[in-house]
Image 1 (spheres, rainbow, N blue to C red):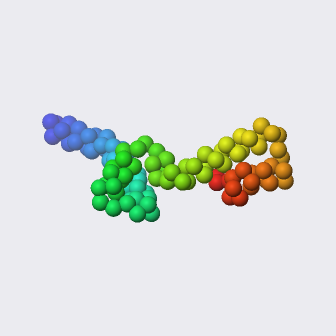
Image 2: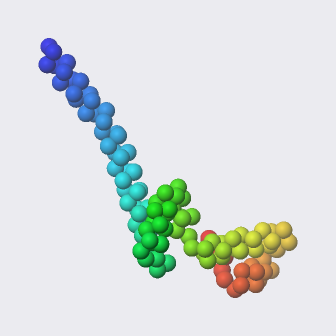
Image 3: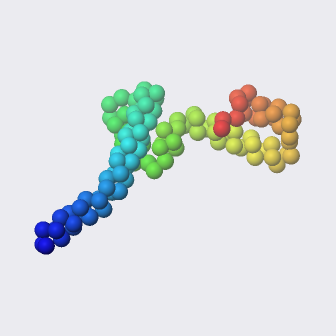
Amino acid sequence: MKMQVCSTLVVALILSCSPLQAVAFQSDTSQGEKAKKCEETAKKRGLKGDDRAAFVSSCMAAKDTAAATTSPEEKAKVDNADSCERQATQKGLKGKDRKAFMKTCTGGEAAPK
């Protein structure tokens, strides 16, 4: 009888741990993807040595990988496009007028999405 109770408890314990393993696996996968993105960004920026290590470390610590891997130039473009969008909306521009305004406002670049 004690053996049956003991084996039942062991089976129950094993089954209760399975969801925890699935969550841990997902976390490892997302961490791996995050590390890959951070490493790719460091490579694109040409970072080496201590600068690379510091960037990757801060990138991995960031909650938002997209924000951490965005270069200052890309961020400036997005900020500028957002500003131009607000201005076009305030002016009530639509259609061709809005498109022409956006082109001149963003310096001829299409608004990033």
